[in-house]
Image (tube, rainbow, N blue to C red; front, side):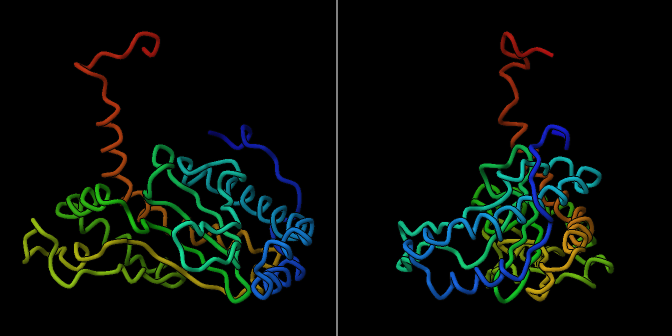
Length: 252
């Protein structure tokens, strides 16, 4: 996918104060009746600037993360909450967010880039968050051999000046089937891997807001790529044709 093939989003790639005000009001009035009455304001002050922001980030990512390019409408996450299995029945999120998944891993967790804007803060993150069981195992097996590469990416000095590691939701004991004395045990204990950084909510009002996101995404790219390596290999193995033959009509 290239930038020229992506739909264009109108608007400036940053919010106005009215956008943050809408989020503050939504947090206080998290009801369908209120949202429907203010939907045009949401479209104007949040959705359109967010799509323009994603488009700007996409243009930069073409140089360092082309496998994560997606149309802005696909990157932007829904404002609606999934309340089917939640005791919290508030219908809307109090933030707007975007997720850049890796091509081939769109329907699973995988390693990617994330950002959201809330009334309190801007969160910028990159890595693998709450991977599925199969992906969790694949990453841990990859770490047995490639832990130095992942550790180097996590501890990059320029990256760590701007972002900190996830908590990792670590286990209290070594995962089953992994050697207890392995030098990567601190990484193997984790159930997610990545980095995150926070800015004041007012950062979303600045004209260089997209640059702040792009800078952090670019620095986190070696980590995202390293974490995606075993996941992409698993996808490729599943797609490998039987006996090495391509189906009729799909030969290249």
